[in-house]
Length: 356
Image 1 (cartoon, rainbow, N blue to C red):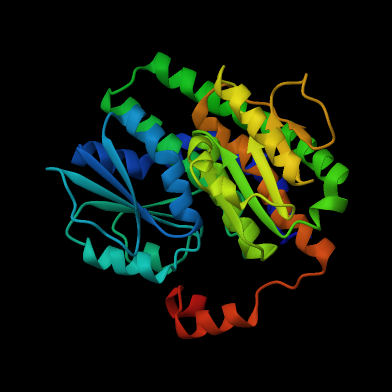
Image 2: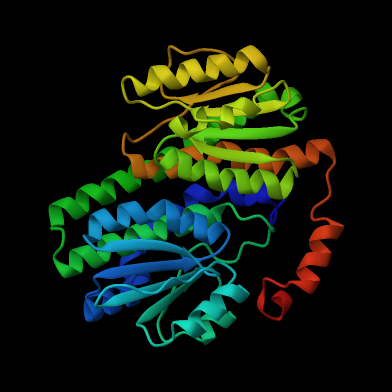
């Protein structure tokens, strides 16, 4: 259990709290490079869960730093724009082959690497480096690595913006307060998510495909959640922004489709999303809502605590699909990995020296 996905899922509040407490020392190298370069364009480069984390964090970083921030897959490096671009490479394991290739292509630009493991190939090839702060995650599908990466990006932005004078101490303290609240609420949200799972586990094992629908950062968290479901439960899993889901994909609704709907707190949008969940329930027995509204009752409803800030919904929304990925496979008796995965990674390796 100590190295299981479930163990890492439960550890998230503790790990994120430690990252917040150590933010000054942890981000020191990033802040020094950022202030020296004074970038007008910041590129975040990674793959898989790291790419999902950078995409989730990019908007907040752009707002805090007042700099264009672009999240880029390691395998699709564009022509870098701006007079003073700066590059950030992120890889939890520190051995992603396409990220290493991207580092070679962009060697002439000022850059820093961020990894979960202290000793790794990416760090060895980096002139500037910092740790995510989550340590090594021995379970295959990453949970705490995702939320820790998002928080790592957030504190990098806040510390660099404070040092550069883009934000003042009052704004900095207020933003840290929001992050601190989000992390403190995670323990209760974990408790509530486990209670929701126990209420619904008998039918959760019957779902043969998933759709996760949300707005803003809840949609970003849903994208990562779908990756976890695909990796573990091994069923089709899709994520959509709420309005985009209505423009075509909704046609896929049938009795086998499990729907998770992150109900917005925004007036108007909230009512439309609740109606969508009700429509789904008309065709499928597997319609679940995540909401702050205590007046909405039912075994399928998860009442989550939220800070009221969009960027912290990452930490609030990702818990449900992460727990599905951690617990449903064992209830179904599914083995980790697959012969197809073993063959692909042998002939098309994604890790330097095949992770050894």
